[in-house]
Amino acid sequence: MTVINPADKLRFGEDSTPRIYANAKKAAEEAGLTLEVTPHEAAVGHLRLRYVDGAVETPAGRYPAEPWQWEALKALLLNYVANFKKPPDPEDLKALLFAAGLQ
Image (cartoon, rainbow, N blue to C red; front, side, top):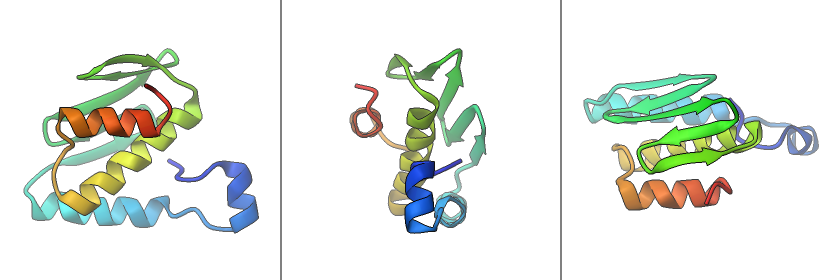
């Protein structure tokens, strides 16, 4: 997982993904939710996102995506869970997809 573009990581010298993941994991546990993140899947509670054959599969649809967009979406999802202690509702999921450049 990565939160920032690798080129930016070299410029700024920090990848905060482990910290965001730890915060999201703690928030999910406090809310009684499961949180699973793998290279090709991210799930929180009832929401499951997958990256398959160059596309992100979500309950909102299937979107062609570059690997960096998938990584950005996972980071946005983790940040959402860390802040709100719940999976995004359909409108918030659309906002996350938009922020990752998928809509």
